Amino acid sequence: MSRESVTPYGSAAGKKAEVEQMFDRIAHKYDLLNRVLSLGIDVGWRKKAIRYLREKPQHILDVATGTADVAILMARMLKPASIVGIDISNQMLDFGRIKINEAALSEIITLETGDSEQLRFENDTFDAVTVAFGVRNFENLEKGLAEMQRVLRPNGRIVILEFSKPHIFPFKQIYNAYFRYVLPLIGRLTSRDMRAYTYLFESVQAFPEGNDFLQVLTKTGYRNPTCERLTLGICSIYSATK
Image (cartoon, rainbow, N blue to C red; front, side, top):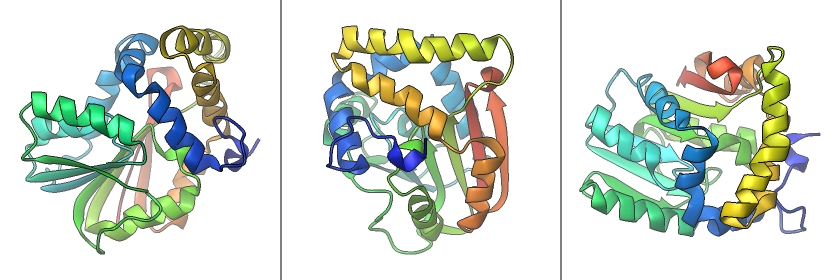
């Protein structure tokens, strides 16, 4: 199964359109489901990924920002001058704007509709680029990575947090059963879109994790890529510089 063949609904619309549709459908329950399905561990994952930006960047681009969880955490932890968050799902962005206003961070964080493969920004615009649980949804992975590399300033850092596959017995088997059978059921009961969480399992299985993804980063122009696996391999932090 190639990553290009894995789509949420299997229609003729294409992966990008289907991903947008999927996140628009589950946006109202997205944050709750993240906390419940990960037992709250996802917050710690995000904080650990943000700590990779030890250079304290002033201007940050958060791609696939969703409901702005990472953007809000970065604003609090790093105190940058500005953060731009982009996403193809307007429903997710609407919920993100509510959270940003409630956190009194609207002067720092700006959210806008945007496509990772066609960024509107000029070359060398941002000190850092972040993506949390979004790159496996790119229709064209290499094109999206190359675009983010283009808008990074020289020596700027990209940090990517993404699901991966555990390899340790018996945790691997327990994890696969949970993602394949339990998670879609919970997703259907709470968000009424079982297919969205079946797609999650399939997209993780098809994603080129670990060393394979490090090679993709190198191929698209990044330097010194690294990978840190978290929580027995459930997810990984990838970091590289321009």
